[in-house]
Amino acid sequence: MLNKRIESLDIIRGLSLIFILLFHSSIYNFANIHKLDFTNPPIVIIIMSFMALWGGVFIIYSLVVNTIMFLRRSKEESVVKTYRFLLIAGCVYLFLHYVLNIFLGRWNIDFVNNRPDLTFVAGSMRNLHLALPHITKLFEGSSLSTIALNLIMVSGVLMLLLKNNGIKKITRNILILGIAGFLIQIISFLRVTIYPEFTQSIESGNFLLSIFYSFTLANPYPLLPYLSYGFFGALLGILIYSGRNDLMKKVIIPLGLFFLVFGIAGMMNLEKTISKPDYFWYFKTNFELGVFLLLAVLIISGLEKRSKLIKRLSLLSWFGRISLTIYLLETLVSEIMRIILHVFLPDWDQTINGCLLFGLVNIAIWAVVLVFWKRNGFKYSLEYFWVKGFHHLGKESTKLISPKSVTFE
Image 1 (tube, rainbow, N blue to C red):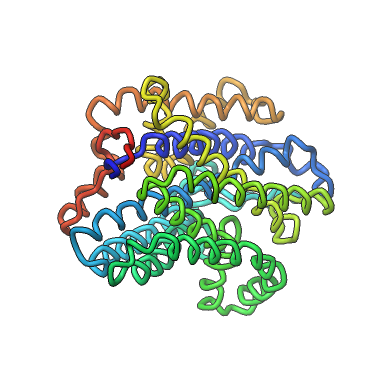
Image 2 (cartoon, rainbow, N blue to C red):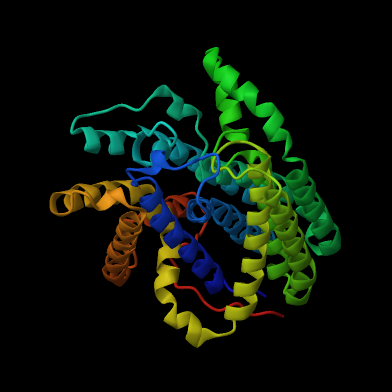
């Protein structure tokens, strides 16, 4: 039987968030990025662009923990009632997606022409006056929108699987989730051929269709292929909840290795790009999925029974515990630090090394904040209000509960 939290998953999420803070702060502040050769970008830029896209980990994480919650609560209440809570959570994430993309989120840049597409906060702070973002911000994707749709869609599949005592049909559930995740990932190359319809819908003013495509096709986290990440997260959740650590290694490791090798093989034979919706991007998402699946097994299997090591990594788990709050506020903090640093070091953003150092400073600031914030249990964080809100709806949340080690029957 599983206790309420899995400490190693908090560490995975915290580590992922740290990489996001580092590389978002670095890539999007580099003043000379437009001078790079984007037909064949330097390997350091390719690596940084990979490391900045850790939203896939959050998608997998979200479905792991919510699948475990779904399984645990299905013993106490109907699966339909449990699904309603996840449906509400998905809608909240969709709302936060627009808050992020329009007001608080990171900025996008046309790297070739060095034209930033700023959100309200970033644009207002850089221009020193209120600056509303361009309407195209409504048609950008985000990890939050993809998490939302994964919660709604994959949890809907779980609801159907768990009906009529389906929780006991572990083999059937694993096969369905695994095959669905595998097929969606493999056929996600269709995004490359459909994508021009997305740009045409925006140009023609078909905003309803553009919004639909913003969830399914738009950068940086379209539902194709990231719906597959959700299915694999649900698969991991079932294996963890069922105590099948042995089966987790036998199923997830081969899948992870397949996607890793498949992704590398494809990328090696294609022109290197960063953000174009092309076949290089398709193979890149396969590679990332393989890395994330292997990372999940490695950390869960390697850390969960090592309480002393986990305790030493408590700062990572704090990053993970209030990751949504930090993710929504990262641009605000980064822009404040950018203004302050320009006063003392006007040319800090002229080199990639200076920008990487800026990213490290951002992480250090958040680390100090977390040390003090932890003392009152991260009160008034977004997660704090999340817990209170769902408590009023009749659902107890474990988001801010001090985690315990996982135990298996």
